[in-house]
Length: 473
Ligand code: GLN
Image 1 (spheres, rainbow, N blue to C red):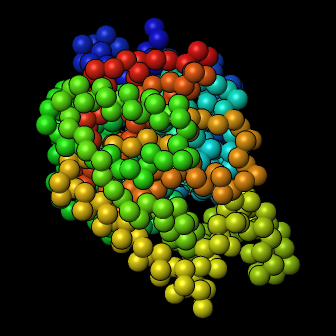
Image 2 (cartoon, helix red, strand yellow):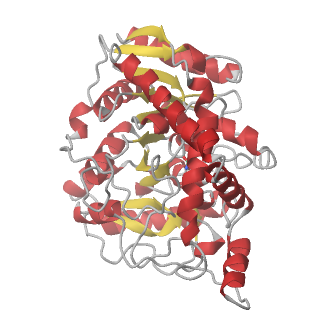
């Protein structure tokens, strides 16, 4: 049986009818991973002894987990040398919730850019993941391993994290569904911090229904995360309504200008037309501070990262370099343990926070962040959602942007503002380029209105075939 090809909701149905068991699913999935992961390399430390967590439930569906989410008893290394051998003594809240919902998780973890710094998964200390649609291309990043695993049917569903686009952009590049929840909707407890005011965990799935199911499982208030929102979680599957008649959608004019690949633009316009014929109402809107999103993000995200990464010094976790004294040990450990991009971000962030520059850079970035958020608040007074491309291009070639960080940073131009504003957004497959590479459509809504995203995404999906396409491997 090729159970690995199915979605989680299809498998749950089969389990209910006693047509299959969790054990069969895991065994099928293991075979699939053994068969294709040599090419895709979506997982890291894949040779590790047990695939499935021992406390997993007999009827559950295994979730594949990004390497920055703590799993008790299974290494969690953020694909960084500095965390080599780190085996957390506790589970992240999302993992505890997965277990208590009756599901399970895989003990081998998904590849990612080191500490989630990147847009291509090339910054992993384990080497890059390959895009299942074209093995010479990147899967996007930083949750590239999770996205590629789902696209290659090496995962039933997966978790990633999104600080500036790291769930949505790889979802777009790999032709799967990816959701960044409202900031505070999903607990960050046990997610190794990159930029604490931006990070959110979210699902990467084969279809919209699975994303709703996984959101039902992982969402909710957590006293262990001080930024967690204490409001009830709706049943997101109730928002899977195949009807968008009368829904008001804004199209930001600033997103359809130079820099957007003409082929991607055409595919997005076709998707918009499709939703028009289904009854959604479109109107052009403006997000006047969009042009500042990338610089503001790279000041705030690096500032927070430089502070969060200070704890990795060779004393408490992972790698410890041999050295003469304590200071020398700190220096050598950090120099050996961090990759180039991590070092670049620590330097940038420390600079932006240093005396004399704090006001000029960091404080000013915080102010512009508020303006960016207000742009959205303003639009959501009159509109139910906003539609944009997820990324300006389809997947690029491995190696194409590694030497040009600024070019790499532009991959997230359409996703970053969402994190700065704290609002939710989803990416759904909406077509393919002539080269056969997937393209994603991004839908944004106001705080805690994930239901609107599900409704639009579900309607679009039910009336198109893109999510059913599979890469040849
Ligand atoms: N690509 C962006 C960055 O490099 C976003 C990463 C993320 O969302 N984790 O920071």
